[in-house]
Length: 166
Length: 164
Image (cartoon, rainbow over all chains, first blue to last red; front, side):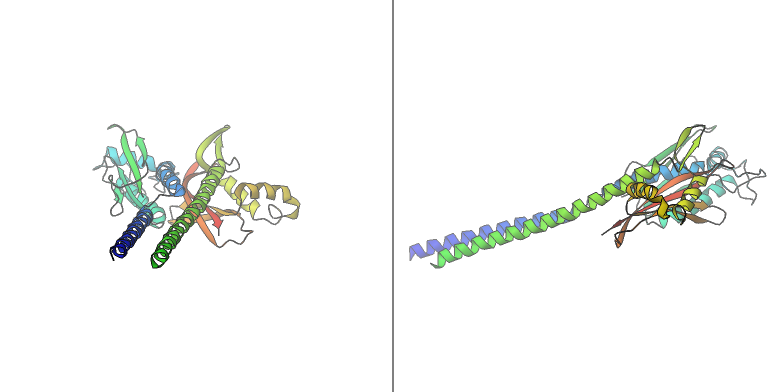
């Protein structure tokens, strides 16, 4: 009788071991599935996206002609906007002031690119009121290194930054 | 007898559990590795096309990084889609060259037209010989230069790799 009970206890021990092992394996699986990894391509694309967008935008020539035959570069409009936020020197043919024009152009570009690709981003230009961001993306959000560029102005270099949140 | 059977049962249960989990982990790992390979392919394609001399802007032999010449894009786009050019049976060597370079992919360049707030698309390359169903995309903003008047435009380099 005692021998039989001892055997039952051993069996119970085995059952406990099986349960513990299963619990361990399930925990491991759940943890592994929750472990989100950023893909190589996403990381590469995000890094390039921020910097390339800023570089390409700054070089582009706009339709703001302000009485001259060729359009003014977006970087020149940004500089004017930062130097004279209340009293812009550049007024485009359509009557828009530099800050207004920059704001509209950047918004249109983001709308056609980052927003339509459903990328979460945070963009700002220092010394201007130009900031765009999608909800939840800020300087504390996880992201790759943001794209940055400095523009020389009369009031000192101004920084523009574009962070793509992961 | 019953005890031995119980032990054997538990042993096989443990073994099958271990096998199931091992199989699941291996499957995840294989999927991850395949994804990584596609990722590396698309990064490699991005780097190939960003350093392609056929498309780059240059001034007095100095190459401008991340800048593409609009005229070069138009010419390459026309050549790649012309039955007397890239698609001609007489141009097998050129076709093999570009096919080895770009593999199974679809490459287009979109030039932003600020006036109309839309993009003009230039198809550069398309090859899906294996009839693969899904694609993996990489979109890269670029600068496009019109060398006729020296003006710069905002553009998008759209790369898509065909995958299973």
